[in-house]
Amino acid sequence: MIENILIVFAVLVVFIVIDSFYENRHFKITGYDIKSSKIPEGFEGFKLVVLSDLHNHVYGKANESLVEAIKKEKPDMVIFAGDILTAYDEGDFTPALSLVERIAGEFPSVMAFGNHEYRMVLYPEKYKRSFSEYRELTKKAGATWLDNETLFLERGQKKLAITGLRLDKAYYGRLKLKPMDEAYLDSICPFNDRSIFQILLAHNPDYFPNYAEYGADLVISGHVHGGMIRLPFLGGVVSPMLKLFPKYDRGLYESGGSNMILSAGLGNHSIKMRINNPAELVVINLHSR
Image (cartoon, rainbow, N blue to C red):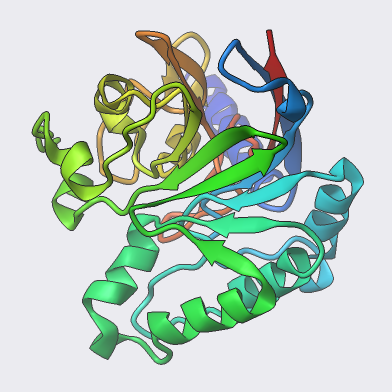
Protein backbone atom coordinates (compact mmCIF):
# COMPACT_ATOMS: atom_id res chain seq x y z
CA MET A 1 0.00 0.00 0.00
CA ILE A 2 2.74 2.47 0.96
CA GLU A 3 4.72 1.54 -2.15
CA ASN A 4 1.69 2.31 -4.35
CA ILE A 5 1.23 5.68 -2.67
CA LEU A 6 4.90 6.50 -3.20
CA ILE A 7 4.64 5.53 -6.87
CA VAL A 8 1.58 7.73 -7.37
CA PHE A 9 3.33 10.60 -5.58
CA ALA A 10 6.47 10.18 -7.70
CA VAL A 11 4.42 10.17 -10.91
CA LEU A 12 2.59 13.29 -9.77
CA VAL A 13 5.85 15.09 -9.01
CA VAL A 14 7.26 14.17 -12.43
CA PHE A 15 4.07 15.41 -14.11
CA ILE A 16 4.22 18.72 -12.22
CA VAL A 17 7.89 19.27 -13.10
CA ILE A 18 7.33 18.48 -16.79
CA ASP A 19 4.15 20.55 -17.02
CA SER A 20 5.72 23.57 -15.31
CA PHE A 21 8.82 23.30 -17.49
CA TYR A 22 6.64 23.28 -20.62
CA GLU A 23 4.25 26.04 -19.57
CA ASN A 24 7.08 28.38 -18.63
CA ARG A 25 8.43 28.10 -22.17
CA HIS A 26 5.30 28.23 -24.29
CA PHE A 27 2.32 30.54 -24.54
CA LYS A 28 -1.09 30.35 -26.14
CA ILE A 29 -3.21 33.01 -27.81
CA THR A 30 -6.52 33.75 -26.11
CA GLY A 31 -9.09 35.72 -28.08
CA TYR A 32 -12.05 37.81 -26.88
CA ASP A 33 -14.81 39.66 -28.70
CA ILE A 34 -16.17 42.71 -26.90
CA LYS A 35 -19.43 44.21 -28.14
CA SER A 36 -20.90 47.54 -27.10
CA SER A 37 -23.24 50.15 -28.56
CA LYS A 38 -20.72 52.72 -27.28
CA ILE A 39 -18.03 51.45 -29.66
CA PRO A 40 -18.24 53.66 -32.78
CA GLU A 41 -18.75 51.96 -36.14
CA GLY A 42 -15.40 53.38 -37.22
CA PHE A 43 -13.76 51.12 -34.61
CA GLU A 44 -15.59 47.98 -35.71
CA GLY A 45 -13.07 45.13 -35.64
CA PHE A 46 -10.42 47.23 -33.90
CA LYS A 47 -7.87 44.70 -32.65
CA LEU A 48 -5.84 44.98 -29.46
CA VAL A 49 -2.98 42.66 -28.55
CA VAL A 50 -2.26 42.64 -24.82
CA LEU A 51 0.97 41.64 -23.10
CA SER A 52 0.97 41.47 -19.32
CA ASP A 53 3.38 40.23 -16.65
CA LEU A 54 6.17 39.26 -19.01
CA HIS A 55 8.73 39.89 -16.24
CA ASN A 56 11.66 40.03 -18.64
CA HIS A 57 10.87 36.51 -19.86
CA VAL A 58 12.11 35.61 -23.34
CA TYR A 59 10.41 33.23 -25.77
CA GLY A 60 13.02 32.02 -28.19
CA LYS A 61 16.09 33.96 -29.23
CA ALA A 62 15.46 37.69 -28.69
CA ASN A 63 11.76 36.92 -28.05
CA GLU A 64 11.36 35.93 -31.68
CA SER A 65 8.41 33.60 -30.99
CA LEU A 66 6.48 36.35 -29.21
CA VAL A 67 7.30 39.01 -31.80
CA GLU A 68 6.19 36.77 -34.66
CA ALA A 69 2.92 35.92 -32.90
CA ILE A 70 2.16 39.62 -32.45
CA LYS A 71 3.01 40.44 -36.05
CA LYS A 72 0.80 37.61 -37.29
CA GLU A 73 -2.20 39.15 -35.50
CA LYS A 74 -1.69 42.50 -37.31
CA PRO A 75 -3.08 44.50 -34.37
CA ASP A 76 -4.37 48.06 -34.54
CA MET A 77 -2.71 48.62 -31.17
CA VAL A 78 -0.45 46.75 -28.77
CA ILE A 79 -0.96 47.22 -25.04
CA PHE A 80 1.84 46.56 -22.58
CA ALA A 81 -0.34 46.13 -19.50
CA GLY A 82 2.24 46.24 -16.70
CA ASP A 83 5.08 44.21 -15.22
CA ILE A 84 6.82 43.81 -18.56
CA LEU A 85 10.05 43.99 -16.56
CA THR A 86 10.92 42.67 -13.09
CA ALA A 87 12.10 45.04 -10.38
CA TYR A 88 14.85 42.94 -8.84
CA ASP A 89 17.55 44.75 -6.88
CA GLU A 90 20.20 43.62 -9.34
CA GLY A 91 17.85 43.28 -12.26
CA ASP A 92 18.00 44.76 -15.72
CA PHE A 93 15.31 45.87 -18.12
CA THR A 94 17.16 44.98 -21.32
CA PRO A 95 14.82 42.09 -22.36
CA ALA A 96 11.73 44.23 -21.82
CA LEU A 97 13.21 47.22 -23.61
CA SER A 98 14.34 45.12 -26.56
CA LEU A 99 10.81 43.75 -27.03
CA VAL A 100 9.15 47.17 -26.79
CA GLU A 101 11.61 48.57 -29.32
CA ARG A 102 10.77 45.83 -31.82
CA ILE A 103 7.02 46.15 -31.39
CA ALA A 104 6.49 49.89 -30.90
CA GLY A 105 8.44 50.61 -34.04
CA GLU A 106 5.85 48.72 -36.09
CA PHE A 107 2.54 49.04 -34.23
CA PRO A 108 0.92 51.83 -32.19
CA SER A 109 1.76 50.87 -28.61
CA VAL A 110 0.73 52.05 -25.16
CA MET A 111 2.33 51.19 -21.84
CA ALA A 112 0.73 51.07 -18.39
CA PHE A 113 2.13 50.67 -14.92
CA GLY A 114 2.27 47.41 -13.04
CA ASN A 115 3.53 47.15 -9.48
CA HIS A 116 7.07 46.37 -10.70
CA GLU A 117 7.34 49.51 -12.84
CA TYR A 118 5.94 51.52 -9.95
CA ARG A 119 8.43 49.97 -7.53
CA MET A 120 11.26 51.27 -9.69
CA VAL A 121 9.73 54.74 -9.51
CA LEU A 122 9.48 54.61 -5.72
CA TYR A 123 12.94 53.20 -4.98
CA PRO A 124 15.30 54.35 -7.77
CA GLU A 125 18.40 53.89 -5.62
CA LYS A 126 17.89 50.12 -5.58
CA TYR A 127 18.30 49.45 -9.28
CA LYS A 128 21.17 49.39 -11.73
CA ARG A 129 19.24 51.36 -14.32
CA SER A 130 16.50 53.86 -13.57
CA PHE A 131 12.85 53.75 -14.51
CA SER A 132 13.17 57.19 -16.05
CA GLU A 133 15.76 55.80 -18.45
CA TYR A 134 13.47 52.87 -19.31
CA ARG A 135 10.53 55.20 -19.89
CA GLU A 136 12.51 57.57 -22.08
CA LEU A 137 13.95 54.75 -24.18
CA THR A 138 10.55 53.11 -24.68
CA LYS A 139 9.06 56.50 -25.61
CA LYS A 140 11.90 57.01 -28.06
CA ALA A 141 11.00 53.63 -29.57
CA GLY A 142 7.48 54.92 -30.19
CA ALA A 143 5.48 53.75 -27.16
CA THR A 144 3.07 56.04 -25.29
CA TRP A 145 3.00 55.86 -21.49
CA LEU A 146 -0.31 56.36 -19.68
CA ASP A 147 0.37 57.50 -16.12
CA ASN A 148 -3.10 58.23 -14.74
CA GLU A 149 -3.77 59.62 -18.19
CA THR A 150 -6.17 59.03 -21.05
CA LEU A 151 -5.34 58.67 -24.72
CA PHE A 152 -8.20 59.45 -27.13
CA LEU A 153 -8.21 57.62 -30.46
CA GLU A 154 -10.20 59.25 -33.25
CA ARG A 155 -11.74 57.88 -36.40
CA GLY A 156 -13.85 60.41 -38.21
CA GLN A 157 -15.74 62.39 -35.56
CA LYS A 158 -15.87 59.50 -33.09
CA LYS A 159 -13.54 58.65 -30.22
CA LEU A 160 -12.33 55.70 -28.20
CA ALA A 161 -10.53 56.22 -24.88
CA ILE A 162 -7.67 54.25 -23.35
CA THR A 163 -6.82 55.15 -19.75
CA GLY A 164 -3.80 53.86 -17.83
CA LEU A 165 -3.88 53.79 -14.02
CA ARG A 166 -0.97 53.93 -11.65
CA LEU A 167 -2.37 52.68 -8.36
CA ASP A 168 -0.68 53.64 -5.12
CA LYS A 169 1.54 50.97 -3.55
CA ALA A 170 -1.00 50.54 -0.74
CA TYR A 171 -3.25 48.80 -3.25
CA TYR A 172 -0.66 46.11 -3.84
CA GLY A 173 -0.32 45.00 -0.22
CA ARG A 174 0.01 41.32 0.50
CA LEU A 175 -2.45 39.15 2.41
CA LYS A 176 -4.99 41.90 3.14
CA LEU A 177 -6.84 43.96 0.54
CA LYS A 178 -6.96 47.67 1.29
CA PRO A 179 -10.46 49.10 0.72
CA MET A 180 -10.53 51.69 -2.04
CA ASP A 181 -12.23 54.99 -1.29
CA GLU A 182 -15.14 55.75 -3.63
CA ALA A 183 -13.55 59.00 -4.75
CA TYR A 184 -10.02 57.64 -5.26
CA LEU A 185 -10.14 56.82 -8.98
CA ASP A 186 -11.85 60.08 -9.88
CA SER A 187 -9.25 61.96 -7.83
CA ILE A 188 -6.23 60.47 -9.60
CA CYS A 189 -7.68 60.16 -13.09
CA PRO A 190 -11.00 61.94 -13.74
CA PHE A 191 -12.94 60.85 -16.82
CA ASN A 192 -15.97 63.00 -17.57
CA ASP A 193 -17.53 61.95 -20.87
CA ARG A 194 -19.17 58.57 -20.30
CA SER A 195 -20.63 58.57 -23.81
CA ILE A 196 -17.12 57.54 -24.95
CA PHE A 197 -16.17 53.86 -24.66
CA GLN A 198 -13.34 53.69 -22.13
CA ILE A 199 -10.71 50.96 -21.93
CA LEU A 200 -9.09 51.05 -18.50
CA LEU A 201 -5.62 49.56 -17.99
CA ALA A 202 -5.64 48.66 -14.30
CA HIS A 203 -3.02 46.11 -13.32
CA ASN A 204 -4.57 44.82 -10.10
CA PRO A 205 -7.88 43.02 -10.82
CA ASP A 206 -8.98 42.84 -7.18
CA TYR A 207 -10.55 46.27 -7.52
CA PHE A 208 -12.77 45.39 -10.48
CA PRO A 209 -15.96 46.45 -8.62
CA ASN A 210 -14.36 49.87 -8.09
CA TYR A 211 -13.37 50.12 -11.75
CA ALA A 212 -16.94 49.24 -12.74
CA GLU A 213 -18.35 51.86 -10.35
CA TYR A 214 -15.89 54.37 -11.81
CA GLY A 215 -17.58 53.71 -15.15
CA ALA A 216 -14.93 51.87 -17.18
CA ASP A 217 -16.46 49.90 -20.04
CA LEU A 218 -13.59 47.45 -20.50
CA VAL A 219 -10.91 46.80 -17.89
CA ILE A 220 -7.66 45.06 -18.84
CA SER A 221 -5.76 43.58 -15.89
CA GLY A 222 -3.01 41.13 -15.03
CA HIS A 223 -0.90 40.73 -11.88
CA VAL A 224 -2.36 37.40 -10.65
CA HIS A 225 -0.48 35.16 -13.14
CA GLY A 226 -3.59 32.99 -13.42
CA GLY A 227 -3.17 31.84 -9.83
CA MET A 228 0.06 30.00 -10.79
CA ILE A 229 -1.43 26.55 -10.12
CA ARG A 230 -4.96 25.88 -11.39
CA LEU A 231 -7.19 23.14 -10.05
CA PRO A 232 -10.29 21.80 -11.82
CA PHE A 233 -13.47 23.59 -10.66
CA LEU A 234 -11.48 25.69 -8.14
CA GLY A 235 -9.36 27.84 -10.45
CA GLY A 236 -6.13 29.57 -9.47
CA VAL A 237 -4.59 28.56 -6.15
CA VAL A 238 -2.54 31.58 -5.08
CA SER A 239 -1.89 35.14 -6.25
CA PRO A 240 1.40 37.09 -6.00
CA MET A 241 -0.27 38.90 -3.10
CA LEU A 242 -0.33 35.53 -1.30
CA LYS A 243 -4.11 35.28 -1.43
CA LEU A 244 -5.45 31.74 -1.70
CA PHE A 245 -7.99 31.00 -4.43
CA PRO A 246 -8.27 34.61 -5.64
CA LYS A 247 -11.72 35.69 -6.80
CA TYR A 248 -10.27 36.98 -10.06
CA ASP A 249 -7.54 34.83 -11.62
CA ARG A 250 -7.86 34.74 -15.41
CA GLY A 251 -10.53 35.16 -18.06
CA LEU A 252 -13.55 37.39 -18.67
CA TYR A 253 -15.60 38.93 -15.84
CA GLU A 254 -18.68 41.18 -15.81
CA SER A 255 -19.96 43.65 -13.24
CA GLY A 256 -22.61 46.32 -13.60
CA GLY A 257 -22.28 46.55 -17.37
CA SER A 258 -18.47 46.62 -17.25
CA ASN A 259 -16.25 43.82 -18.52
CA MET A 260 -12.79 42.86 -17.30
CA ILE A 261 -10.34 40.75 -19.27
CA LEU A 262 -7.74 39.34 -16.90
CA SER A 263 -4.61 37.99 -18.52
CA ALA A 264 -2.78 35.06 -16.97
CA GLY A 265 0.41 36.80 -18.07
CA LEU A 266 3.42 35.71 -20.05
CA GLY A 267 6.05 35.25 -17.36
CA ASN A 268 6.72 34.79 -13.67
CA HIS A 269 9.00 36.12 -10.98
CA SER A 270 10.27 34.73 -7.67
CA ILE A 271 8.33 31.41 -7.83
CA LYS A 272 8.54 30.42 -11.48
CA MET A 273 5.73 27.89 -11.52
CA ARG A 274 2.78 27.30 -13.82
CA ILE A 275 0.66 24.18 -13.48
CA ASN A 276 -2.39 23.70 -15.70
CA ASN A 277 -2.07 27.44 -16.30
CA PRO A 278 -0.61 28.30 -19.70
CA ALA A 279 0.92 31.71 -20.29
CA GLU A 280 -1.10 33.76 -22.75
CA LEU A 281 -0.99 36.50 -25.30
CA VAL A 282 -4.41 38.16 -25.26
CA VAL A 283 -6.16 39.34 -28.42
CA ILE A 284 -9.27 41.54 -28.15
CA ASN A 285 -11.54 42.44 -31.03
CA LEU A 286 -13.94 45.35 -30.50
CA HIS A 287 -17.36 45.36 -32.15
CA SER A 288 -20.06 48.01 -32.38
CA ARG A 289 -23.68 46.95 -32.07
